[in-house]
Length: 247
Image (cartoon, rainbow, N blue to C red; front, side, top):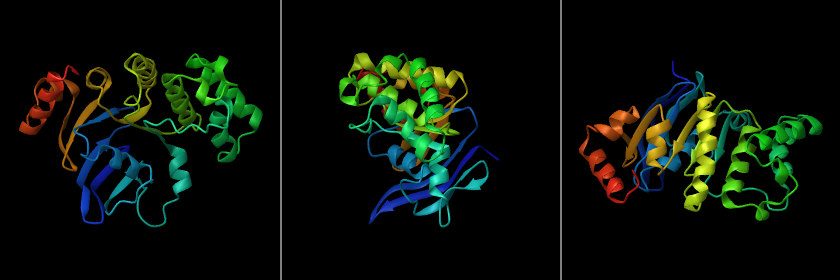
């Protein structure tokens, strides 16, 4: 049994089928990078794992427990599976500290003083403790994204999902966020990332999955996918990435 098991997952919106039978296993402490062209289903898959989208068919299990379909406790699921988006989604009327402590206090019922102490520890770790009383619009994009990641980490999730989290950032801010992900990976955080950062995927991923037309078209260790892809469509995609200077 794998830590996360995705079995024959389909998702359609009306007549449009976005996921057409996704099968994927993720082991604990793995970093799995989802790559592929826009519209291939990467973001939709992450949203299905977190319960933000209901799947149309198939099954997803986390540590053996079914997390899709009728009767699933979505509140519990979202406590265990954190998700961070490309738009930071920080509450603009709350300070950084309030953003990070809101869910632990409201959802986990952690005493505020304890939640604030934990939040300050996380902010210290990313070098932003001095921004705790600032509002999000006073932070750079890279700082806001790191706070969004820390807000998810404050819930102590078993699994982190990261959806193109660097795509809205200026190039010089991307490294701030990727450095934090490298640190989390080295500590054993289980993560699934939808990403266009091929160099990062090549360096950090335990497994790379190339999605095409709503299925996992090819998967394997990064050295295989980037160095010796087996499928023609994977080769075409990576050639275009290399041509664009992104690998």
